[in-house]
Image (cartoon, rainbow, N blue to C red; front, side, top):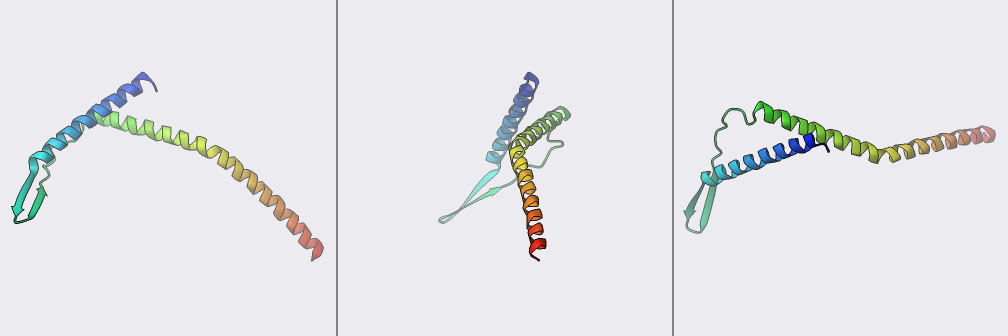
Length: 110
């Protein structure tokens, strides 16, 4: 991972931390508790969205992070699947050989 990738990750994590803290503060301020005999009700009033969630720069950072993660996952998946694909190709060859031998035997016997 390059320094630029690390910087992007740090920015994304910092943004995530800030957004989570803001949301937690909003949720704590909007909870109401009503008491009725033994029963408690808790209601949540979500705040109205205010414009864009992310700035353009933050959106770019997030889209780069998603692209990096997606590419990394695809590379790892390809590495894991490569031996399995080879084995499947080998087994297909064996099945074709066995099918050809079986067909020859049926022609001789038939």
